[in-house]
Length: 127
Image 1 (cartoon, one colour):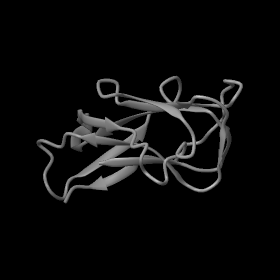
Image 2: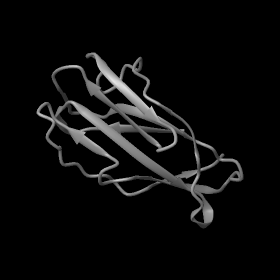
Image 3: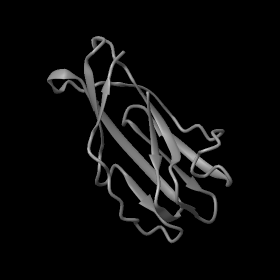
């Protein structure tokens, strides 16, 4: 399970995040579930009405505010990806990467793109 967070963004109205996970030998893991838990206290749009969406096949999640925008100074939750780790053994590592470009984006209240940076891949060791 991988939770995705955002921080340091002003005037956020909509987002979409797409990720991929790879096991040893660069084998792509399939997605078991994708969730935007709007009941979480740290959800980026928790104080506002929003329309979340998930896409298990495309390994994407997103949400849009019904109206207005929010400023996100400290880390806030966007969603969760659960990957199928069948065939991955304890001690193996999995590399998780955000797909940048058209698959992941941020939009402001005017629907203009918001520039953002993504850190390097996250490496997860399987228990």
